[in-house]
Image 1 (cartoon, rainbow, N blue to C red):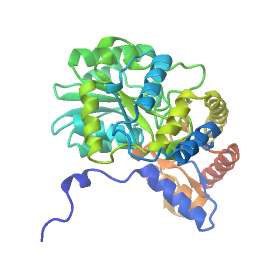
Image 2 (image 1 turned 180 degrees about the horizontal axis):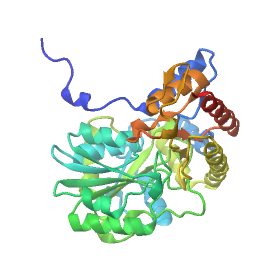
Image 3 (image 1 turned 135 degrees about the horizontal axis):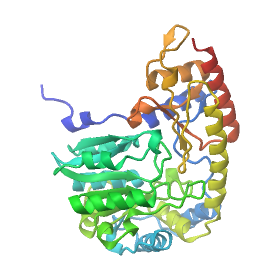
Length: 399
């Protein structure tokens, strides 16, 4: 009997964040109230002007195929946004619009990586990075950063990770899951390494607008023409405008890579949804007031949750400067037990929190570090307060 499945699908696993969120939703639907910190999406509604643009598109019959890589109008809006916000100029043939930033990353990995290539990934990392590198049959080279360095790798770690086989590094700034950020000097050092050793920088800037304490993100592509030519920026409207379900992301960079990403997309999903593209166009060109409203509320929640977690014995929590996650170290709880169930790792802790405290968090092992869990504070302050109290009670009961 012939083998049923292709070997490549065995290289990846289901997204742990999606799995945890789905389980929490199932429990809620069955009548069990779950306080969920799982989902990586703003709890705010999409702004009305954006929704109205989508409705107008439907009424005007803008419901047909578009160019595979997105409409020229949306590409022009992305070009203007990148110029205004990051000081980087692109052309239409350097822009690929996809069904979310995740599709841009997947397209890029399939076009750029092949067997034997090494791709540097900074841990803790977003779960998808390692999966798409493995699916392309390339080799993930993991650099383990810690909260002691703000989850930014040291220069020595970067130098040691580079080999003649290094094809790219994936840079997430600000970071999911840690909220860690790269200062300009960090980016300048990385840019120097990329140019000297001739590897690509894949800059995931999805959380660039969600920053705190006066931090000003710098796009590595803005540092020089030389590093711009070796950088592919990936971004989208999901986090900035609370449009996760609309599925519009984009990439900016090298013309040849972009052309081939669009070619691949034309044979897989074709164009991103026409209606969602019109909504994204309004998001980028319309009023921007909602960005600061959300950012301020996220900062308020961050301040509360960091202080609250740090008050729990056995937990220490890094104070993030970006994104809407905290990534507390929970290794101080290892070896303890509840109802004769011992905690040895982040998966066991997350499972027990869900079963015993009805709180959903994401195990750190999915992000490359088993000493942590991720909590999203993109949820209401009421859920945050009730959830932290439930975690406190859970920890108090541990023996």
